[in-house]
Length: 174
Image: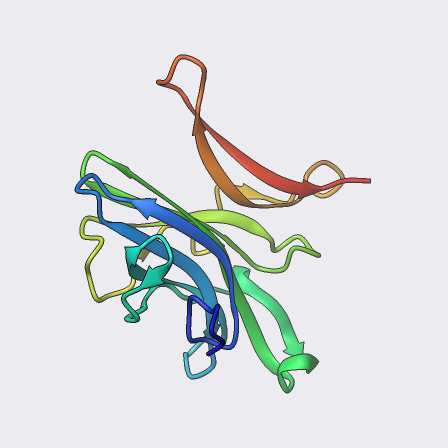
């Protein structure tokens, strides 16, 4: 690990800081899972001891488990494996339930979209429950060919009245 690295993983992207009601800070980010049933990128959480340091005990939050999360069925850069992607975590809490919104699939094709996972205990040692299986329950945002391409990696913000919330996400356009 370099002197300035926050995590110990070789690959870590899409960091999101969440501060719980009790003031505890958490860092959610995406990293690779090479020994998982669905090889690829997934999200983890680690407690922050301050704004510049982690506890060093990352726990899986959401790893790929569905076909809609396939990035590449034969990813040459990773040795030709069936590669899945879950990334871009954003966390919010409402009425005792924690929601992780995340992106999955491949931003370059119609598989890419946003779904969510939930837990009632941010400290749990099990992965959070995912909402979309991609077949019976589709992601909440997804590519609509010719209209919305690659919606993903989002945040939620409050409106001017401080009550309504809005999902702000990226997409691809000419």
